[in-house]
Length: 128
Image (cartoon, rainbow, N blue to C red; front, side, top):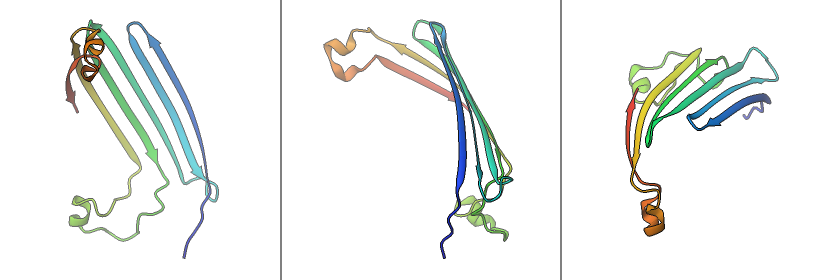
């Protein structure tokens, strides 16, 4: 038996790019039309700072309020299924964040000499 559920969604985004870096933020939300209490709201933001020539710091974060998990069964899941990600558990909140450092070096003319070089070499670190 199949069930068709209709959903509404809205998203607002802001992106700002300056010589010092960039900032972006997105607020999105959705809800099912048959029951507006089954909704999901998410805020996603990022900051990219160019500190020195070639050295960048990226800070990113995401927070979500989740109230629309209709496909999760009502019974308790065995711990093996949860650990192996075969079954998802119900949750009301989700959050994520990271800090990354990157350094780009090399000539900006590398791609003229050999297009395989791209925009220079990159060293990337991520702290979660």
